[in-house]
Each structure stands twice: as structure tokens, then as C-alpha cells.
Length: 115
Image (cartoon, rainbow, N blue to C red; front, side):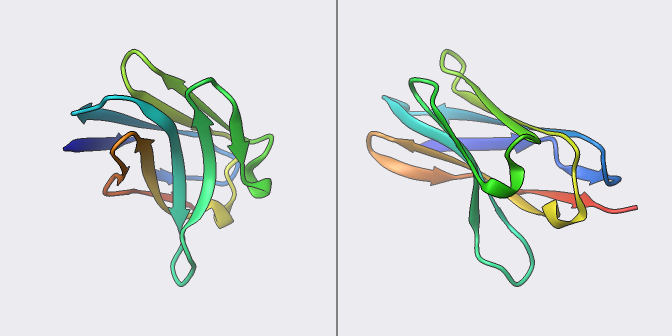
């Protein structure tokens, strides 16, 4: 079993920054990708950013140039640095880990961008 613990959500003003962290623990053999998804009220869950074991990344067009994803393979952690936040970034952000043996989700952390 794999557990994901997220931290770092909260309330921030437009233009501000937040840093989300996710730590994976448990029976982890080989992680393929680590990433962040988000779901706004009334919308489907969408990919925000993803990073592969080799370090290559994918970003949603809406966050390119503002968000940066990074990972520490030794600690099985993934971090999403979010800058220049906009009200439309408001959502529940979910950590995702895909590894040999399954695909796992965190419980989610709420990010609210509002003045």
C-alpha cells in the first residue's frame, strides 16, 4: 500500500505564490511519474503538471511559465511551486503517483486565490 501526504494549500491573493508538497510512503518499488491534478467546482479533474523519473515534465498550457514541478527521487517527494496565481487557479489540488503496481491519489489540498 502507498500513502500520499499533501501539504501547502491555502488562501492567497491574486499574484501571490504557494508551494505544494507531496510525500509518498509505503511499498514503493519504482515510481514512473509524479504529478499534480486539480479539480475546480463543477469541472473535471485536469492535469496541472507531471514529472517523469528521468526529469522530463509536462504542464497544462494554462500554468506554463507560472508553475514549476520538481521531485526528489531519494525522498519520493514532489513539489509544485505556483507563482503569479490567478483566481482561475482556485481548485482542489491532488497529488498523483504512478508506479509499478498501481496509480495512487492523495486526498487533495484546497488552493483558493482571492482578494
